[in-house]
Image (spheres, helix red, strand yellow):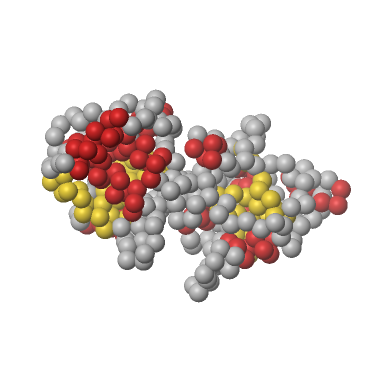
Length: 347
């Protein structure tokens, strides 16, 4: 009765911001167990994504009462390993997949895991894939930066093609700023944020300028002010010539956010809920799940049905209601992702 009532409620509920997405219509009845491994805070009394996943599962079972779920949300690091060991049907990542994870899967199967984008990361909510922002001192007159300029500021190889950027004058600032060196601040380059920037900004290069000052987290930190990003922004607030990156969950009155553009000549975009939701902000994060799908075959039926639900109007409405900061997919991206279930993909 509870599942029937939920199903009727879902049919009657308005479609929130996702009314351009098609409604979920099952292709076939499925049953059995779906095992999900990955992002979560298992046993830590924290809410990362568990409530949202439970909301998806309960709603999906209104359509397929023969389905059961086994959740092992021990953390993103457990996800891909469970997939290639055969203990997980779905690997849910709270960050972008890392190259060694792809390589490990390929070593077992000879092809990469298939990634499906299921929602957009949050604007500024901790543990929910928040967007990365570029910060400078509050008195810095810089109007905006392109990804190529960021590549030339922080990176050694500069795969986006610009000459080295070492001073604020190299970015067009004049007067007293022109010959001032740019002091580089950041988080540890072996951690998730830096690896994301290597892929997104450096185009895969792993070489950072040696002048980068890294701010690791304090394992005993109990607040955003005392962990790595908080301490970095406090340091930046005292350095007019510094630059750093962190999530918008962190702030300091002595710094400001720099708007970004994907390419030169395009408008600079500030990170806002709207610009993150529509993917116009260049350093928006993406939340994906991965499946084991041979290139020449469709996804297994129970997995495919669940993913079709996640990418439907109803599935994205659950993100809107219960995501706690996670954002629904743009319609065009949801439609693109669903095609991966039936067609060959490269990644």
